[in-house]
Image (cartoon, rainbow, N blue to C red):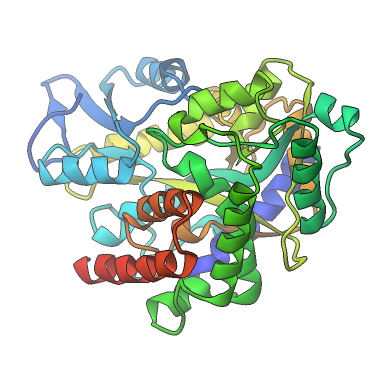
Length: 427
């Protein structure tokens, strides 16, 4: 297999989106948390739950598999906390690492996952597979887009606003809404640090870094560029200006993500920059009161940010054969559970034979917005040999809260560089 460089993962993402628009508790020990009886294997499955991805979603995957494979029992190991990568590292250090873990991409460089068998690799779009030191060791399971702006149609109609064509248009929309005595933008922060500035950074920072520095992640790893560069400073300064001008909901940092999303839907703010999981919230409720647009980049580039989420099988698991059977069943033999999971969180399939679901108007509009755009992978989730070290995303999320609260932008970016180097040295 030809080795795929870091950013090749995004090539098939754009193709996939186009197809979808038209097509549509663990055990202990060093054996990966495995527990076996004489007649049944227990496969530990490390996952998490959210408002959208509920226990019912996982049950729709697990129960049919267990019925088809009575010799295998699947036991969920539920990640907790804001930093799931840190949670899995703790499980690894305590000898309780599950047989299968979702969101494996930030752990891939640790050398803890088994090589993916060829018969599983062949199920996935080739350009979505990435290699670490010449081996495919995790399976891309979903594609997700982030960083578009949802808006209240009634507010836009009342104020005679149109979706922006330039970044200045976006800022003027914020000003018009504020001048009308309304709150332009919603955010969260308590317990969900990413809900403060991460989506804005993805909409403007990741896109402009890709446009200006196409090999940013590789150059960063090789010491040819720093986080503290002209693009990053421009983006964070613009973000801080939105806060200084009073365009964000007062008290937003006291809200969890769920609370800020609820507040937005109740009309406490006119806009929310979010990820495609909001599509599922709106479409599943039949809510037609909200639209969605791409925030134009400050440099005029047409780049959208998507990322794959991967699953890995622990290399020391005694249940690898059962684990790979679980993958094959989910992706090909009975895809109903897979489709339910995708639909629940506004996700899209990675398989050569696309798994689709009925898409409502918001999901359809979300994809139409980026038709013809170049799709880039989220910087901190870029897979491959130059992957950003685990922990960097959480650090950036907290730093964006500092910027929100008025911290010096250049000093914060210096901290990004220092933390990046510390994490790289610790690997």
